[in-house]
Length: 165
Image 1 (tube, rainbow, N blue to C red):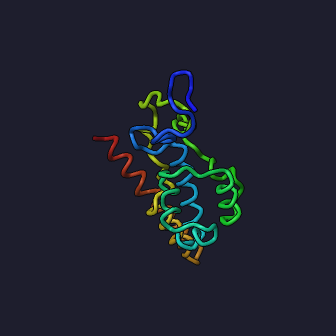
Image 2: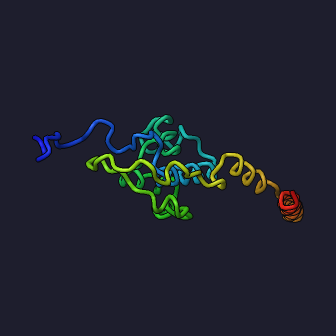
């Protein structure tokens, strides 16, 4: 079947993904929230995949935003990761929230949008998650508090130094 313009109906080749090949910022954010929660639980990609019937490679693609997570899969993830579905959209940067979503049945459209400038939340980086987990393994609250104060002091000094340059 064809449309009035002569184009075939149904799925187009390469539909759903902009020609730039970059993931949509919303998909990246949702994926980073999956990774954040999985890592905070100490769960591997393989274990998460087993729990929802996927391979670890598929979980990896979801976490990078390379594959869009459907509603039913997002619901499964929320149950396995023990968070409400809304968790995956929490703290979304404005540029991601305002990004245009390319649906399978939409025409190509503009490719220049915030996806090219979007950077994932630094709070979802592996280094940050490992640091937080290590921090909470410190059983003595006073030692943890001193480390927290030291970290803040080092960060303040770095900011002051950068401002002076």
